[in-house]
Length: 221
Image (tube, rainbow, N blue to C red):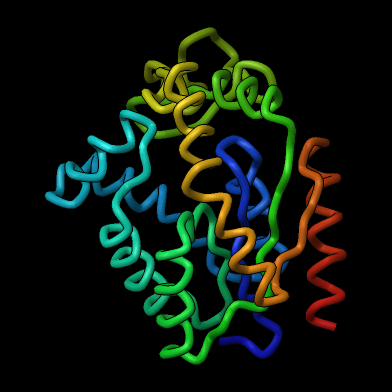
């Protein structure tokens, strides 16, 4: 791992902007952006046994079982995390958090900080329900913040844009309910270990990034 590499997790409910902020931090810090959600969706699209099993949970807006997510996270961290990493959407349960701590201790790469992104629930539902993805090339759009030039068509390849099953209103409400019930306790887990920092993520992405950048500067400085 690079001397100044950052080792962090981005935490927060669905739609809070973890993926957007992880990409900005990756560009700034040169660390690996590790999204277990993207890895699971890739496996599902490829039709692997693990991917198909995970897809049945994701389509219902439910959490993928810990053993599946943990195995994928360990594999990616071992291959890509040495220069620093940004975990996006993982861990989601206390069981996963404990398993992550054990894995990172074995790799001698403990977490430096867990950034907890926060935003009102109404804002999260609006963000998620507006997302669209190209069924052909996977390019992402948003009906408000990043609309396609032609309605329903991908600017990059002309493919059809679709709404993911887990971005439909009923699944969003279920996902937020699952988050409150199963995932929020991870906040207490990391708070007890003095690595948790809360960041207001209700504003524009560039403003949120500046807050995170200032926070990381104080930790790494």
